[in-house]
Image (cartoon, rainbow, N blue to C red; front, side, top):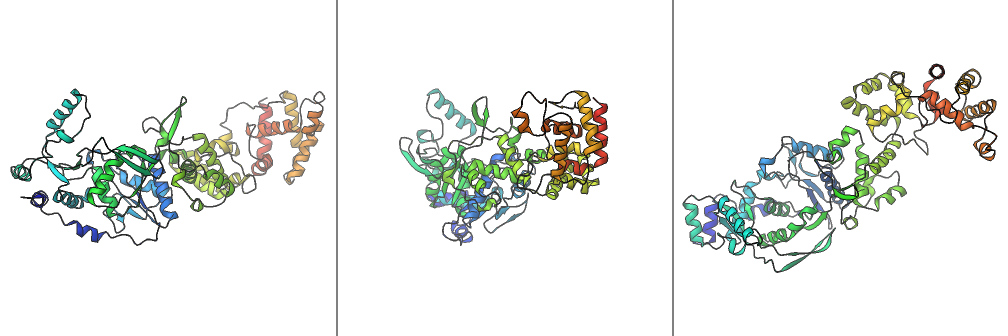
Length: 552
């Protein structure tokens, strides 16, 4: 009896590994092309960290004319959530990270290196497990869960490192004959990898992001095939990344401590090891302390949050690139209109300790992104969001499209476009004063600021309409008339004049403009008032000024 007999007994139908080596040959790509992937588990909503990894993987593959694929790691089927695969894939596609290969829906895939779902690759894993058994590098383990628990309890009592290794690996030293006898007797088994490592020896490894790292060797005889015939993550990832010809494994740094084991598996299987890049997690500042973004605590951890809030996908992508490489912000400043595809992402310039997620910064980025959009683009995006989340706004947009385009066109398309909209959920509040239906519901006070005398406010509004307002005026004429009105009221016609004579005037032309602005909008800060007046028109302006006077 030898290891070959044992392997044949355990996996009688498994193909020779040469079959799979021929079926999945080396990829015909140019030198330096990166083949990488994201390999999520379908266990819940898509985390922003998963999107972050997807962005980095996609960028690197794109930059080098390589391949980016999606592999679903669903071997832990107890934790699988319905439709999670679709959500993962759709999130990537929505944000512009469409995979070149891999899963494209819950059941469909594309590419020649599949299947891309681990649960349907069982035969492949069993062939490679059989190969390891034939080599004497893996063995069946017959320990029950009670026996494993007993081993752990003894280790804890003796205050020694827990695990299945060395003298604690009960099945490791069974003879081939004993193993075969147990299998023929119907005893249940799993497959363990026979580690040749020793904890007192170190391995040195160079991670692309973390740099040089050092760990004790792995000496644990880990499970590679479970009782249900499916592999563990560690074994599956080694087989899959080899057969899918992955050159770079980009993953979260929670897997960094697994590097000794994974290198050992690649070596034991006779595979070329891919390069590893361990990404630090996205962090959040809480009371001065950094912590990971949490699914439980932080709504922004879920990718769906950004759609609900109406933050443009382009803004999220730009911000994630900002987190990924500190050089991106300067690049964007120097290249305001270039596509992000032209930015060269560098793994060795990524943060080792984890970048802070700053919602204020993200919204600033979003304001810039939206400021570059046309009125039509703002309209379409707002309508798409409103149809899902704000019925009243959607109705308003659909029934008054031409007027809405004028509203969204205010201060847009010039050298310094308006930057007051950070997300589509802001739009209604930001432009409500442009719609009579919404303005009439506004019960806020009129915050007139410097000029507060009721008679003076009333005189400014009435005089402006009676004497100075003309729909045909260009912007300079319009502003000159406000200066004239300020002079007529006894205020400084120029701010400079006001500052030079602090005791002479109680207000200046800017304060008169504020009275007009507040009467029109109930706000002190709005986009260009001349453009607002042009869109609102004479009838609405007169009506609002009259209403403001009545409310004094």
